[in-house]
Image 1: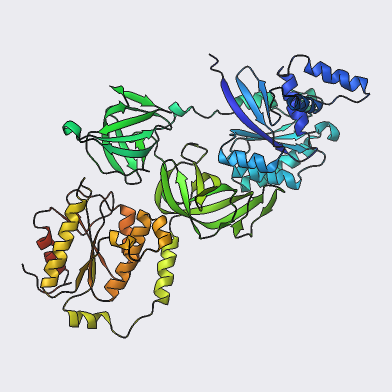
Image 2: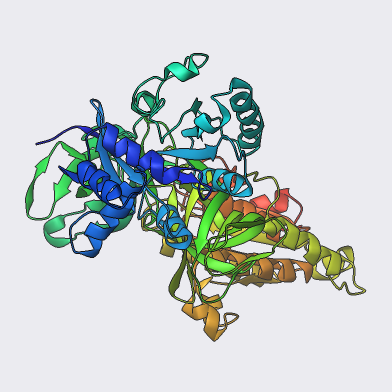
Length: 598
């Protein structure tokens, strides 16, 4: 079995800058052409009194493909002593960009060809933008046709200086600039005597020095949770976490973290359907896992090893997306993002620039992306998610966006974006600015009602405690009501068949649930009531969201049993026994109610 390394390289360049000649030379100088092909093309040129050019080799290969011979014109293959190369040409911009962004093709490096005589053209800059938007960080600039400027060093240095500054603005640090004449073979495979002033590597030497992506098994563990199964037959209390390992490996005894909830446990066993238990599983395997401590996690979370490099966590990220939707990608419209097994609401909140894939026109002023546009955008998810930049982990750096139940775009995550200001904060700010206040002040309501307003949220991270906290909430409401306090308990499920419209029921989500509870709390606390609800397994960001949505009124978050929080500090942590009395005492201590007794 051949275990040689393989690397995908994309080659781009302005028309007539010599891209095809470079490819032809790489194929010929590495002996990678079909036997007799070079001689056949040379003989054809001689018979037709045409000067031979290495670019003709690609035309000859295209003719063979048209006859059904299995040579891919968009992809050429050559070998060096170190590795095999697939060089991806870009004959059709739309299909090329679509394939690159959505992952149908993958490039680890780019060769960007510039004509030394013509110099840097607009398309040269556009191709630099494309390399940046595809997340390609290994870029080698080939300054071709040096023979047409008599191998002048000053001409080469001027291009290197100007284009280097341009790439720097795109956050690309080019690996190297190489002076060459592909037509004559200077600095392709053999160092040229005509560029004695250049001390760097040839093109082939430079390619062999580039870094390969690590294999999936060498990368940190990433396993999106597909589902959690519980078997009750014969007293089997196991919860089995099921999913496919995208990268890395897992062993019994490894400590794992589930993101974004940050819950931790230790792998107890690795299971397989109709298969014996084993101690290890690795990339590309579908497995079931049992944990030593029973924690409540949800499908869509990402399991990682505690000792591995961790993914990024946040609700905003910079990404490039190739849009194929019938309707345009619109700013601040809610779409569905799918990454791993997670499905979550997402908005495009800012367009940084757009490339029209058909014409390669760059636009920094458009506020929506049309079909076949490649857009560099800031996206914001409904809650924090775990992800990796595509340059580090492709499996968790690619996503799709769904609009109207159809996949409308594929994208790659470049980096995390600033989380300081969210669209929710902007919403609350605008809501409060436009809030129509009545003539009754909160202090007047409190004087008449005999208590202040409060939003009480009961939660628990203990498995199967959902019904328990609902019972406590109902008893709390009943107790406060008997004391003549204006208390109201609302089960969040009531929202689904109440405030939710027919359209939102079809696309109901946990985030929409949290959002509606928070908005309702703002109204009920403004009316002076004590509003009580329960949210099982409330997460840190959800608690912060309820706190923000209820502004300017205050919130009281109480955990029963095991806390579901990682960093959020609840106002109280209680046991089931005596919970109602404890909440009443806390309300009295905070002077929400004046008298409390059973």
